[in-house]
Image (cartoon, rainbow, N blue to C red; front, side, top):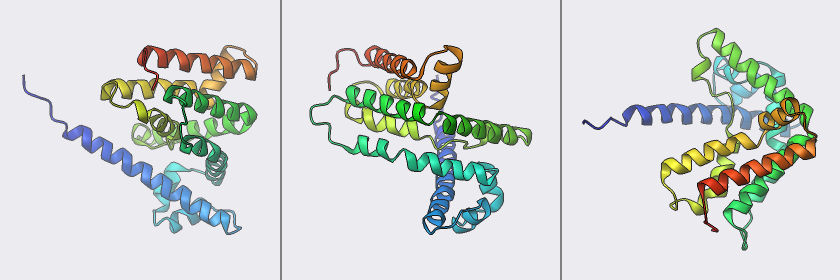
Amino acid sequence: MAQRSQAPVREESGRVNQKRRTRKAVVDAARAILERGDTPTVAQAAEAALVSRTTAYRYFPTQESLLLELSVTVSVDEIEALLARPLDGTTPQERLLELVDAFNRYVAANEALMRTAQRHYMDTWLAAERVGDGHDQQIRAGRRRQWIATALEPVRGTITDSEMQQLQTALCLVLGGEAFTTMRDVCQLEPDEAVAVLHWTAAAILAAALPGRAS
């Protein structure tokens, strides 16, 4: 049987990475404007990022959505600091669970902000879908996937690349606003209970994917 070409996969990956870079450029430009003491508009951020206004508005349809993204991005600096710390005897699995707990506690403390963010992400996707661009839009920055990959980097090589990809994808379900909202609205849990259940779920996923691996 002829081997399937990987060219379309690489091409798709390239488009996704380009969209991610473009989105990040707009956010970084907006943050620089904010740090100068001004409140950035989408048009101002687009101009500073050398991105067309049309493109910038695809990612951030309103000024509110851009300012909300800045709020979320700045507020998670402590997560980046956690992941940058040396393991010092902590296993990658324990570090991953620290990440899950830290971010879900942040979500619990900022539930209204995170629910507003979810609303904006949904509105952006629906607006893109109405013009036929919904399935080709970079709606989110994808921070949680990057954090998970960083936390699990020390165990890369102990499982196959496809298993690692599956593990990272599965763990995306146990931290963040959507996971917390499910615990709160569907399961009717109190915030502390929601954080605990999501911790348990992450531990179960890790145990299934990395049985017996302590490092």
